[in-house]
Image (cartoon, rainbow, N blue to C red; front, side, top):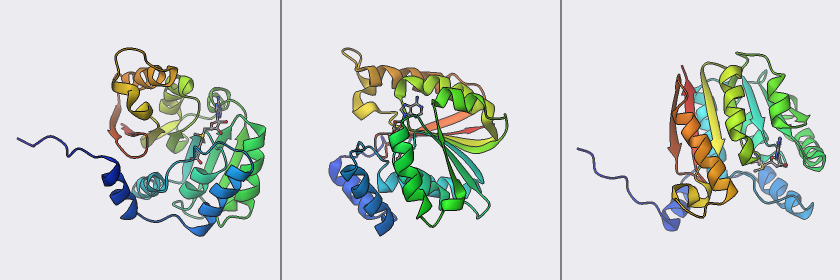
Length: 216
Ligand SMILES: C[S@@+](CC[C@H](N)C(=O)[O-])C[C@H]1O[C@@H](n2cnc3c(N)ncnc32)[C@H](O)[C@@H]1O
């Protein structure tokens, strides 16, 4: 019988981060410029970017859809794991965030592989054809995740990956009382994932919890 998982605390996360592909100067500069421009500092962590890149490469992904662009950090990281004809379509509701992302994408090494779509995730996902994406990455409004799950299952090709950030809701997802709206939304999402036929998923405790699923 296997033993319980090794408890992982702050020191272990620092160790994991130190032993993971490091952030390059471009993405470091993007983060600093985004903070200066007043964007919230809620990009994925460098070790999450490394995880996404590894998963995209394993899937030989060519078409990626992201909900939640912010400054373009994760979109650029993911685009770097695609072949030259690959595409990340990233959805952002805030015009200011989209404009910042477009300006940094334009001077990145992957400018031809990313398209920023401005609008609400639910509307724009609804316009995308079925069976058209290898990967869907959710990193936007948590209340929208259950609706995004339904669209993702329609959009994803067989063996496509569903990835979602913040599924541990700062650890509050295990609370039973006095839950924040985010924790309630993440519980609903994680329950909906578990109840979705044809989706095999696991939650990895990287960053604020990264859900990785593959559809049959
Ligand atoms: C956590 S940030 C995304 C971070 C980004 N994925 C990264 O790691 O670089 C969430 C973003 O989702 C956007 N957002 C919030 N609600 C949205 C919605 N309904 N549709 C699309 N984007 C939304 C926010 O404006 C914000 O820029």
